[in-house]
Amino acid sequence: MNLAQFPRVHLAHLPTPLEFMPRLTEALGGPDIWIKRDDCTGLSTGGNKTRKLEFLMAEARDQGADIVLTQGATQSNHARQTAAAAAKLGMDCHILLEDRTGYNHENYKYNGNVLLDVLHGASIEHRGPDLDMNAEMEDVADKMRADGRNAYTIPGGGSNATGALGYVNCALEMLNQFVTTSLKVDHIVHATGSAGTQAGLVTGLKATNANIPLLGIGVRAPKLKQEENVYNLAVKTAEKLGCPGVVAPEDVVANTDYVGPGYGIPAADTLEAIDIFARTEAILLDPVYSAKGAAGLIDLIRKGQFKKGETVVFLHTGGAIGLTGYTHEFDVAAKA
Ligand SMILES: *Cc1c(COP(=O)(O)O)cnc(C)c1O
Image (cartoon, rainbow, N blue to C red; front, side, top):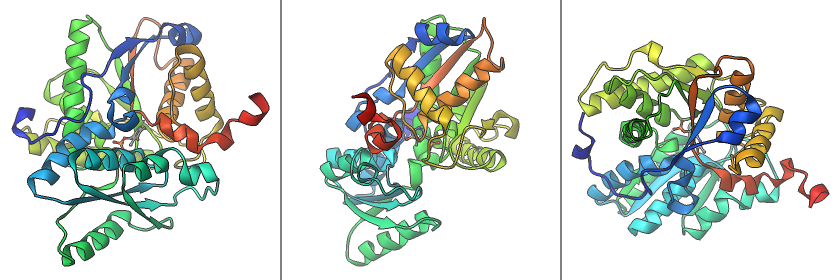
């Protein structure tokens, strides 16, 4: 496996820190909990999409693209990081935003990631729920091409085999940090959505024979669907890397018990996770992804699935800027 063979633009601050969380570890009374800070990738408030965009934007640049298109939910972290990457590389960016939650709050519609999309100069159009958003985007891109634009499309979440290379790279980065820190890791846990993060990680971990189980905590799809999406993308990623067959179906494990009322809608345990991380470690989680992942981590520790004496690494995938789109969830006026 040789990641250096793929074109890449350097957008992220790497390596992101790997840190122990002593107060959270003590509060939960279970395994030692470490955090991999991919919320600190640096591009326009950071997050996991920046690693994928290093490979995706290089492909766009090499194809001579003058505009990149992508799609996501209203408060998409991926759309915001794409808008930022395009600005940095001097390309136009066009975003299709799907109203996936039905929220009508001013902050949800215009603050958080949406504010940053606008600041980075992206153009935005909206769609209702339950459409094939990648197909909608391709239609828009075809119209632009007919008008003479060289348009490069990025699927939702940047989750194709090119984007997943960013998380193969993260797996290698983490393994190296585990060696230099002399850390024997028993589990890696993170939020999984459009599947690219988990697919890249599992491919990297299996291709290096790391022997560390990976658990994705789902934010949308049911378990079997999520595992199928991750597995299918991992297969393609391994083929692209020249190591076909390294990932077996049983290597891909998702737990989707923490989705709550649905994508983008926090449950009580989502909000509790935000509270616990903020008060014990001053770590900001987001209500759509990382806090659902953390809610799973916390519950599985309470249930004894992750035990004292073990070491768990929580991969923080970012998104905290989205908190400002969710002020309605936090009863701020009563407390401030
Ligand atoms: C997109 C995203 C995820 C999920 O990553 P996928 O590669 O889409 O599975 C997790 N956390 C945050 C903050 C995200 O923006």
